[in-house]
Image (cartoon, rainbow over all chains, first blue to last red; front, side, top):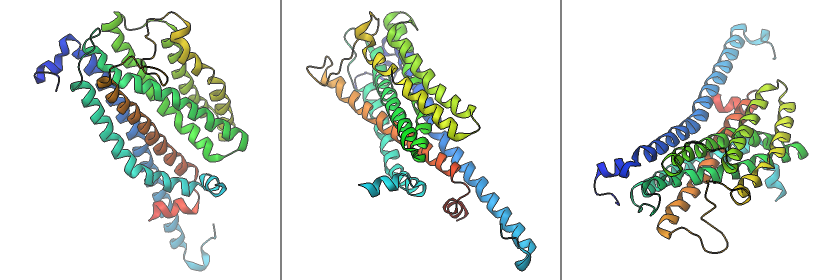
Length: 70
Length: 244
């Protein structure tokens, strides 16, 4: 490691606040970027699964010969 | 060769192949990003003129480089969907926009933070920075334009035209530091001739640029998978997928 101590790495001769802030903001944006599609597709799949289940339930409720073909 | 293009147009195939690529590329990308960041932050010597603030280069330059390259991907996908009416190209174009916007935002914010200790100011309206800001607006414009239309075919066409017209901005960004007097330094890495950056700083930078390219690919594929699911929600294969 270039720095002598953890504290030195944190301060970086006065530039620490700038450097660490830049990295922290980048990490935050990237986490949001990657998490958004994961959460959204999880929700979409749940919604679609629920829709299918509801349709199956209404179909079985009507029973065999009366069930509509839609 | 033709069968490959044929498959590219098939949503279930693209959904599956994107998933299998992500299963190894995403963990690899995260490890490479973490390794590159630690390398750049802690294991390189400071710049002899800028001191430690230069360490921002390991996220600023990769984000900017990939934000620009990503715009080409978006414009080419837009062109393909406009000319050959490929639905999956439209999906790719739409999925590029948020990723490119995020990377451009990172490039602008980290550049601003870097500017304070180096130039003494958070922001200057010089050619490089202003053209990068326009790039951000182009990405956001594509997102907004897509949402503005109820008819998604028309939305796709309008966005494709916008992204193609916007490519004018890309060479301006590249050349801005040479054409206009600017606080921003010209490129330190050159494909032809000697790079003006020490190898000990160059290697972590190259690792980070590679990682950001991989990150762009991952985020793009994830967004595409979501968009495919949305558009194919009424088809048999998606029902089977979510029902299982």
